[in-house]
Image (tube, rainbow, N blue to C red; front, side):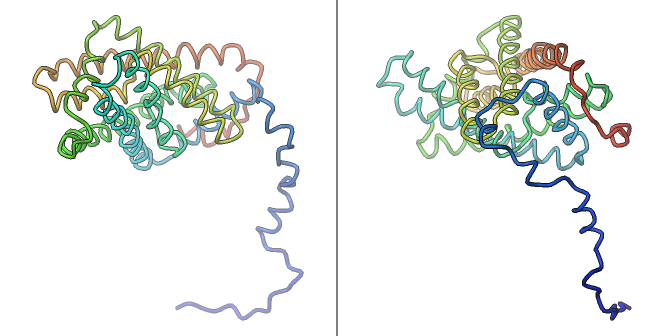
Length: 306
């Protein structure tokens, strides 16, 4: 049975949350000054924020992490939808070089949806999730677990998007099968070493994008950096393990010449390359010259649970 408290509330009595607010820093002091909005963040501040963001992801429930990753795999597929649509519209009206340039600038749309929508993306965590390991706040085994959950979620979301696009696109006349096959064949025509090198560059760029996003203080700047970096990946035809997975898997579904072996070959070398690019050329390099100079305050009680 519920008992209603009939005690008269003392207006001068402080509630626990009131006391906590008194002890908290003045919120007005935490606000950024107008001049700070246009002033770039320092490297130490970026590193600290990245480690804190990564630790937040480590403490998320695996189910929530997977669903966010699954959502990310679906959302990033819109890059292929837009590229396929533009190819279908203009492939017989423009030169191939002009068309490829247009497709390169269409490439970022899925990344904008995923990054600003705060869904999880594997190539973002090839850098972000490594930093707490370098900081000795997280064990390597938990890094591998985080990577596995996000990677699986991204791939499964991408597979579902591929299935939908391969059926709906040609049926609606929005994306011809030839467009999907052309985009997929661009990704699988190289040997393993070339694919690996291309993927290293893509992972490197995605790691830098994660760094630039953290350094940004407003949404417009973040959109600019997303377009700037990912359009380089798209125009150069570099290998991205999640977008490329959707591209090649969709091609596999609509083509008689693209095989499962082609997909596995692509996915293996691209994933390894993205990991190397984001981990070695961004996480380790950045931490090596900033980590020792920065005091990263970590909740050791929570970190020891990882």
